[in-house]
Image (tube, rainbow, N blue to C red; front, side, top):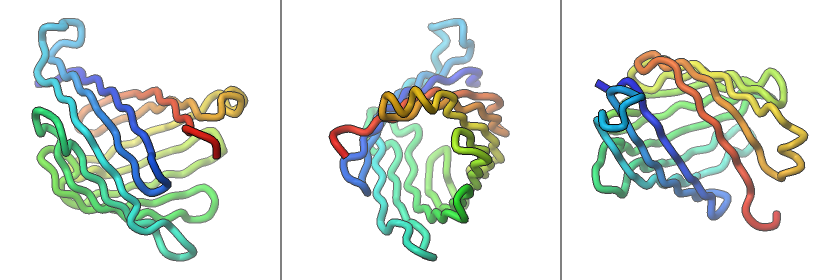
Length: 173
C-alpha cells in the first residue's frame, strides 16, 4: 500500500491548443525509507483543445495520459467540456477511460473569490476532492512574467496533498 507519492511534471504548450507534459512518479510504502518503493513511473501526456470556448459554447478538449513510458500505470483517455460562468466560476465535466484514474464520468467546479485564490471541488470518478489554490505573490509574478502558486488539497481516497507550481510563457507574446 502506498503511503506517500511524489510527482514531478513539466508541461509545455507549443500552440494555443496543443500541450505536452512529462511526468515522473515515485510511490513509497514509507516516505522516510527510500528503499520502500512500490512504483516508479515515467510517462508522457498530450492535450488538445478541439474547440475553444466562444460565447455560449463551452470548450471541448481531449487528453491522453501516460501515452509513452515503460509502464502504463496511469493510462487514460479523457474528453472534457469546460464552461466559464461569469468572471469567477468555471465548470468542467468529462468522460474518461483509464486503468486507475479518470475512468467514467468526472467533473468539477472552480471558483475564484479574488484574483489570487481559487476554491476547487471535483469528483474524479472514484471520490470527491477539494482544494485551495493561491498565487500568494501577485507582484512578484508580474515582475517575473509568470505565475507562482501553491495548492493544498484533500483527496477523499488519498488524504492530504500539496503542490507548488510555476508557470511562465515562452517567447514573446
